[in-house]
Length: 127
Image 1 (cartoon, rainbow, N blue to C red):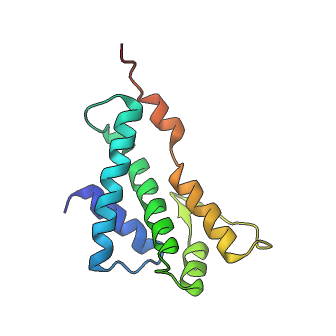
Image 2 (cartoon, rainbow, N blue to C red):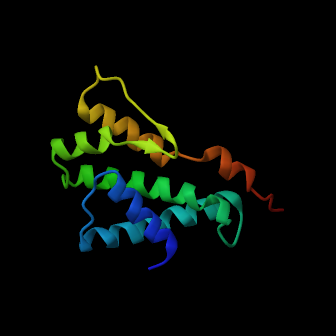
């Protein structure tokens, strides 16, 4: 397993997700998908190492979204994931007036769109 997949697995575990063997195929799929999307957006052939953490966050968001849509999470598991969210040294809290599902959806959306500014910095113009 490469270090990017290790980082993704660690991030999911840090969020309280129980990684099962079948989940890892999903992680591999979304990892390839997100890497290719970033390469297409930046017009690069290889992924800049500085964007690795962007891939990790986006893949985690996609895996969480897929898992929720596939009903692989219970509401208690979703609540546990939301309560443990930190990004780097920053802890993120959401409006507690919203439902657990709404807070989870907001968190997933933030993860999926994470790093747009960093991606723009590595964009190359193609003629």
